[in-house]
Amino acid sequence: MPPLKAGTVAPDFTLTSHEGAPVSLSDYRGAPVVLAFHPASFTGG
Image 1 (cartoon, helix red, strand yellow):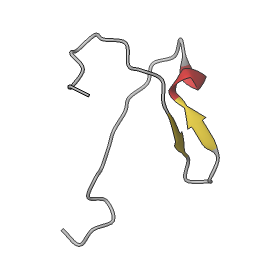
Image 2 (image 1 turned 180 degrees about the vertical axis):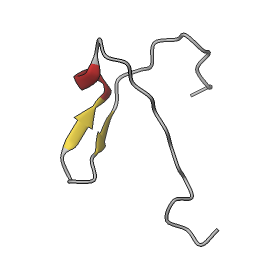
Image 3 (image 1 turned 120 degrees about the vertical axis):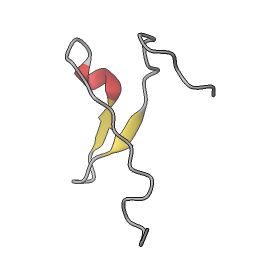
Image 4 (image 1 turned 90 degrees about the horizontal axis):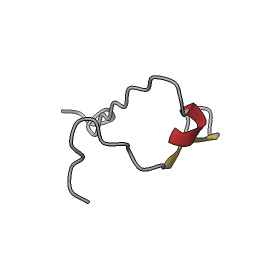
């Protein structure tokens, strides 16, 4: 999938929370959301 342009509505997706519960982007529809990905969070780098 190509990167999204600023202002594009993000597609819905579901991930697992730190508590093990599923969380979907659509759960926050109508509220401001910031997505932050840290691909190297659990690495030695």
